[in-house]
Length: 457
Ligand SMILES: [Fe+2]
Image (cartoon, rainbow, N blue to C red; front, side, top):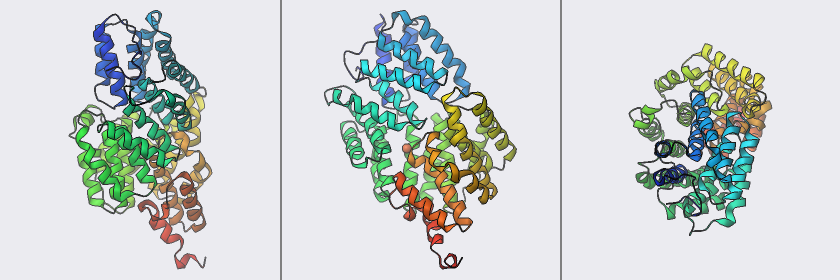
């Protein structure tokens, strides 16, 4: 099947390479595990296929792991070597990869937008653009892109279910919840394995406080995800958030072990330090502890893999979670080193799009996570209150970023700062959460903020 527009072409004289590229492209939008293997197959059949090299480089860059940097550059070099055989559309991918290797988000976005102007139903390009813009806090730009290509899509175009899934997530992060839910549900109706659409609707349900529906929405669709990548762990993370909201804390802990961070799962064994998995794990354990659950030694195995990543500045949101993990096991010296590395990156790599995101959001979030674990709640407020409106720059969804607001509200509540608690709860509602005071992560602080002993301060 051709992903998107059937006139989409891959420049290769080897049909097996073309087929493998097409499989990778649709597979990426469908969050399949097979994408990298497909691209490697394409390269095996046609080592001069520039597009396959560029696409593989973009996959490696998207893993947000500095250990892959040299391989990403090698992919770019191969793609450049065969650029003469590439179409203008394929060339835009090579340019986008080149931009990524320099940390030039504006250039990356410009080239992906060009690729999508040439091929508006290129679901691969749309998905890659969304991913990069998501992890850099630019979902408004992603929404603009999907808005632009929308007129070119309909049910007769291959990849429509995947387009609806992508569109649903753009809409959800823009708080256009009804439209997002309609798009997401339509996608799942067309393709029950549309895990990205299941995910988008899960976000809607969380933001709207419809947690009772949440588990029932996700559970029946799990049967379709056998060949999905680690996104399924993240959707299970969402299921755990619903469990927590529903006060099913034992179910959440059990799902953590069996689904979110199952140490026997082959995907997790193959890549135990994948950024999204560590975010899921840290964020969930913190929330469970906050809800009063003893999580035992579950932080330890994550800390063991984070130990080797303290000089990795591939993702500010991930680095902030690294700090949370290291602090949870008492590795405060490593926390200091991690934050020093983040600061050095932000100061030296001023031309890199992530530098300001580290400076303005990632570093304060990391420092606050550490101070919260140390019990220095005054410091948490001092660090986070001034930057709370900039935290979106770290990337991640409203639901994911919420962990740092929970941390901040908790610190304010412990200090008896009821005005701050109320102000923050109001702001969290403005972010898009319906009635945050009733949510598990905030209800204790909310109750405390109206307690009579505070009324006489
Ligand atoms: Fe999510």
